[in-house]
Amino acid sequence: MGLSTDEVVARLEAMRSGDLPTHGGRTLAYVYDSGLADADALGRRALAMFASANGLDPTAFPSLLQMEQELVGFAGRLLDAPDGYVGTATSGGTESILLAVQTARDARPDVERPRMVLPTTAHAAFHKAAHYFGVEAVLVPVDPVTFRADADAMAAAIDDRTVLVVASAPSYAHGVVDPVGAIAGTAAAAGARCHVDACIGGWVLPYLQRAGAELPAWTFEVEGVTSISVDLHKYAYTPKGVSLLLHRTAALRRPQFFAAADWPGYTMLNSTTQSTKSGGPLAAAWAVVTHLGDDGYATLAAQVGDGIRALLAGLAAIPQLTVVAAPESTLVALRVDESCDVFTICDEMQSRGWFVQPQMAFGGEPPTMHLTLSAATAPLVPEFLAALADSVAAAVAAGPVRVAPELVAAAGAIDPATLDEAAFDGLLQVAGLAGADGELTLPERFAPVNALLDVAPPRLREALLVAFLDRLSRPRPTTSP
Ligand SMILES: Cc1ncc(COP(=O)(O)O)c(C=O)c1O
Image (cartoon, rainbow, N blue to C red; front, side, top):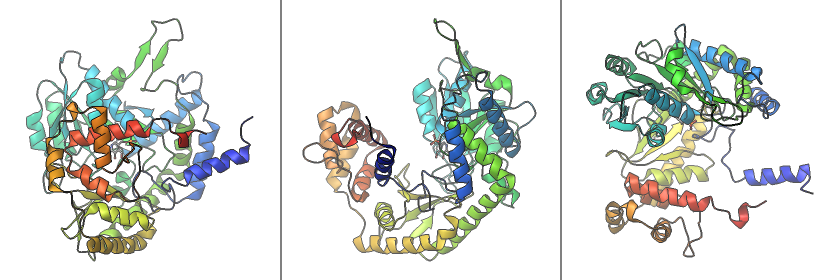
């Protein structure tokens, strides 16, 4: 006999105590908190009600099809979708992006070595799609001041192998909206699709705009936009596991579908990468969206907008910090001066009960600190700013983490393709992620680790972290029930 219900719940609670808090507004990445206990409870109830329903077959579970189509309808109104548009619920932003890339590729069987043109700020999910689907990612540097995509440079990168061109609304790292009009226009002229990644902004920007925020057009209002991804599990504040991928027409979506009849079982017929999929996240999203409605989201967006304004005003009193790009959404990236370093500030914030996310140096730009503001964080901005001021003061007192020049040189010289497992064990030790016995350790403070990872070129950082994840996700005595 296994454990009693109470014992199991106690175990779950104990395991969860080491996690970042999902609610309370003090976690400024990974989670989105409306601060509305009723909406959360409703989402959890719907999640449980449909947890075992299977989205594999919409004729067997028509409720899920109905909920999907109603959510697509809601999103279509938000995103100015034209008559004839269609949409699919997926498990998250990455799956929506994977499908957009796969669909663009498969719509063009005439192109032998397909390419997609991306601003360097496009989400890493596009790199994953490139890897999975053999579509070459052509990365185009963004404007060095505004961090928006450079539409002219992207136009110059489009060629007859380009099947997809991408814009973000907004980009995750800097929170700015790309010039979608110009990008979509050149994509259309070249006969390529244009995907707008509104995974993070799609459910909040329209409400900020209705309240007066000025942004150039970025939705289906722009003619050349062929698809848009928008996540419900971000600013629709629904439990994790739902995003939508909208296409301008059914014909554009068709290559997304997959059928396999050539085996003795049921004919597999899928609109997404998953086959069997829980109805829980979709039902939870339907419940929360139906409950909050347009008015609820308008209020939540206004709350976040106020929070961003209060944050920007308060940051002026912390001279060591500057905003990287004028935020056009609900995300802020901050840069620090020479007196301290981002990684130490992040650790200091964590020790004060706040999670902010470090972003590594990229393309000649120094590391930054990323803040995703949820509605629940907005009223806490004064407290957040006080903690930030204290954290910066502590980081200045400690001085910036320095990485020994010989380590910087060594990191630059290593070709990760030549490393064997023993070499990775050694490097993980140097990075402070493994002890002398090779056993993985998670440091109390991440600044020294992050500072080291920061000087590693992207390929080495990827290889090191994959080696780390590989070791982290092996069975260990502490992970068994
Ligand atoms: C702009 C953007 N696109 C895609 C994604 C990927 O979404 P997910 O983590 O749900 O797969 C994110 C996640 O933060 C995002 O901000």
